[in-house]
Length: 483
Image 1: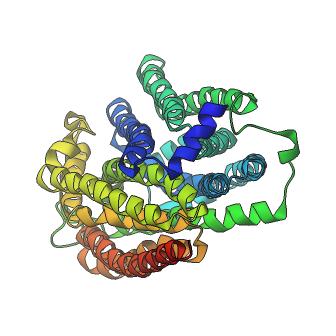
Image 2: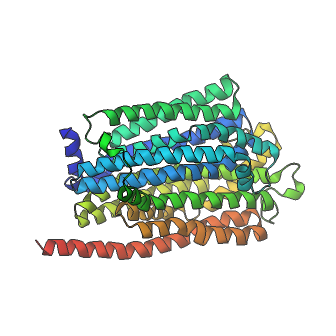
Image 3: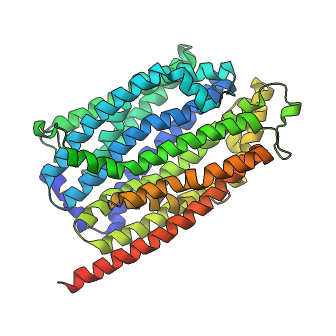
């Protein structure tokens, strides 16, 4: 127990570069591996089932984001609060937060599962805009029925792993996530190709893998040898704790919900206007089939690629969280600002590499996802991905800054600013641009709306962050002066 306690105390004393590497590298490995798994999963489905199945997966993406948004609200909110309480030296309060987070995830996990299962068909139709083919909806329906039965497992697994990292176990959190990914990577091809279960096999593999990882997490938290562990007294809802968790967790919640609704409108726009623009690479008038499904499938592939690099950048963000939270709670504001600056530099390097890959090699990336020998539709999907990816990545070097800025306000407890930043890109910029440009320019308008929204949201985040850094520097100066 003492060694772990010393690990948390070191957050306020060790070299910031060393700490950021210590906490970020495990998070990056886990997050990147998770994204790579989702990419490989899409490759398995694309080659083992077909392009229509990828389109079905694209429709499920916003629905899964909404379901996971509730888990992110609890997981991130609780982890941020735990870090601040540990910085204050209040271990009992940290354990109370852990217990309330588990109860919240249980209640939300079961509620969301029941709602989504009872209303699955109307939800799928809504998020496809009523434009998807029955084949595409069939794949989406088969996948989501299984995923939703495992929703409570997903909530607990992701939430407890987030809190594990915040309480001083970054490497263990990484290994548990890698365990889940490795099991998925093994079971996916077995179920899809070996057993012939198709898209349902992918969903079953995901639920089984997360269940095994959850059992490992429960074993950790039930051991009293660990610094932060389950305590019977903590499993009672406390209004103040729940409010604090939700207030901080509301930012990632809104981010996921807004992203889900924007994805819904993006899918609808592509189903309705894809192939109608003069510069769209596949024209509806000359395509023998459902060109809208091709564009939705292409967008699903693009999301997988973009998410890979966002997750790596977010790994630095997650590594920053316990360092910033602990030092903010300990009133060491100079260390908070330095950690922020290091994290922005690292995340921006990642998104710059993403820009190079997506902008200069889009065809090679697209061709990895689908077997073009399957038919004209899959060949067309490659061309659409290549066009969309190149445009979406145009200002991607700026996105690393955007990701870190949004997380930073969460970690220091500035809930209103965190919530505002979580909605600016999606609702204030991307959605209006999408609804304006796609009817006029087809899929090209949808693609262009993405870098335009990124640029605008970076300007807003930069302005808010400038004033916050100035305030923290002033507080640090006053702290030194008062000694």
